[in-house]
Length: 220
Image 1: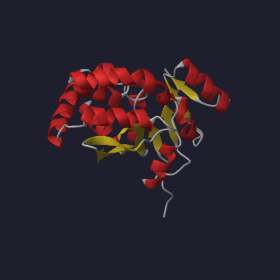
Image 2: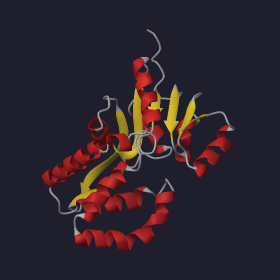
Image 3: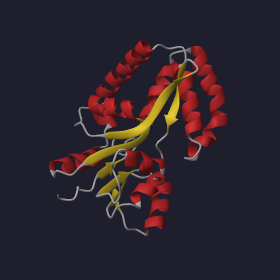
């Protein structure tokens, strides 16, 4: 039996699409209700630093997920999500990061197995990718669960947790290529002979350069 082809991995936010899709979705939900908006604004200065460290970033992410969803029915959340996706679809050209999307299409055309691995909730990322008119590919991402009348994070797939989530999905290193915009994905970038940084900020570029000693491609 021939060996299974190595997988090509793409991060989602900042790599294939601009911005943070989960944050944008939650902002829409929070902004639609004055009390939610007030609580979010008051808590953000306190919780913001936690977003900078992958080990604890799940805590503020989980809090804002709960604050945005508590008291809302699943039907109301589904309707709000569809509204969000429709709005995103009207901004397709603005949201898609064309060089990375072109690479993904090229890998698919070559027959390479491609997987999107993201810190965003997997269902949201999958739905947004589809709403932007892109081909179906497997998505491995974060998950949520019901709690206290809303939803909270069940798993936040960032940093090394992406490797564990991929392993549970039967996807193992070494990877054929890894595309990301951020040094937080160094655990993945170190598991491929073809690491690619997509429009990185200076800090991520410096960190990846230090770790990989220049042995990576930059896609601008």
